[in-house]
Image 1: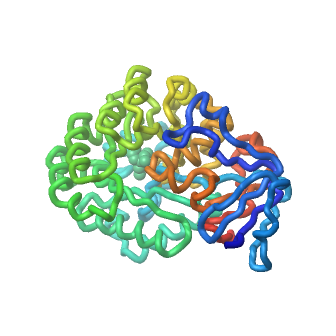
Image 2: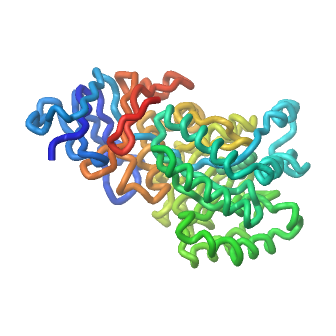
Image 3: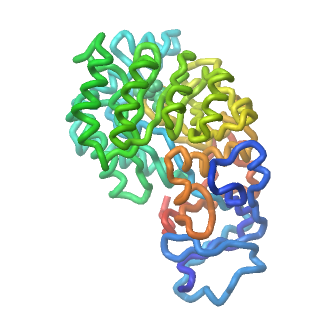
Length: 418
Ligand code: NIG
Ligand code: FE
């Protein structure tokens, strides 16, 4: 079959497909990446079918029906994979910004009934149509930034009906526009007012009454393991129950304190452990030894919460851990959808190199969603989620701080207007 789409004159084609295919990229693997200069990539419908140097292009596969995109010597790379967001919510927390500037901490605001609980009140009161509208608007913004897959957590309902609604809205939003949505159940975000002081009872309720209804609807189960949310012991029991029901596991851990949640979740086979700003080297070694878990770093969160402690990204990579980067888009700790900014801050505050950070928002993020065979790199057989950027050299990606370098977004072989 002839090419349906050809992207030609790629100044640098960042394939991310030169390394090992059976595990996420880390440390020395990154040196084996393929960066092809003056290259092309060709697709048949939603799949990539060929790539190589322009000199190797087989012109016989080009027909009048082939759509041709001229990259004009600029960088071409895989679509961004946003592997940790709280996509579906109502309202905003701009009113808490001032409190934060005056010195109140994230956990103080939560303990006073604000924070996550304030978004829970707004979300419970919103209609399903309003929630869907909000999610679609955010997905359109993500797509403009070149994000082609978005993980979407529930977690602002904290009751059966609203939590199921949030997962339903995430799935529906995925069907109504081109960005792929991967739903995660985060009913265990904080303890709702109805269960105040009884976190274990709330988790038992989720495991018995909500998780069974989500089989086939949400792929992952996540929990916020932190002071003021859920303990390591309660989290362990809940994640074990989720695993028995067949869910993949994720955890929010070591965000504000070093409690040991990340190592615990890795021992249970979690696909990712997220935040990790307070992760210690010994627990990092435990996660590395497990060999199944990606560490998802969220550098815009400490920035927005005015904290000085950032995850030790450089050290984690030196320890052999695969690292992904995400915004954590949500109304409380990161109201930004700019994954390019997160990538830059990962370089500036966590010590990643530009290539490590680029792997963090593509192939390693795909591993964090258990989708690395399908997305995250430019390789024959993979889905044609591809970006044409406006910069000629990948080193400029983290450099133009806060800018959006995206010129063209291709999702499943289809170019979409931005
Ligand atoms: O990943 N830390 C817990 N949950 C979110 C924030 C949610 C919120 O503040 O609304 C996070 O940072
Ligand atoms: Fe989060």
